[in-house]
Picture 1 (cartoon, rainbow, N blue to C red):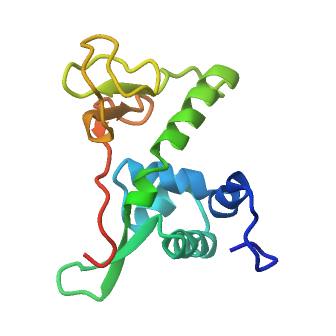
Picture 2 (picture 1 turned 120 degrees about the vertical axis):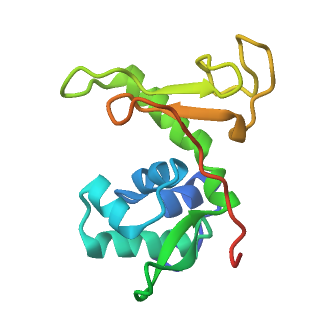
Length: 166
């Protein structure tokens, strides 16, 4: 919902209402990588607790994440933030931002670029198309792994979406 209380007629405007705040797309990137816990988002992003709480609540309200209760060793109940299908559907946006950033920006220190790989054959997916140029096989979201070599040396699968309330 926009700050004025009405939703813009333009779908881009509505998407920006949900995704356009600082930190939101980085939270979605991390959720796509499988990050679910508040402490992990905070530690990875260096974001203030109050800002992270607000962003997570807005993503839950918008239906991109859902809260799932958990308890560590009999401690108090906490919540994980899991991708919904609407959240998983932001994957092409995150991919497009990664591609744009690789093409038009430079890191402060030299780093290997982020890679998007076809899990079945291990080859680089050069475009966000729905097929692998190497093996000519269809590539769905669940068939991809991403590699951030400055972060970890092994590719990681994308988080599977959950149905809210499950």
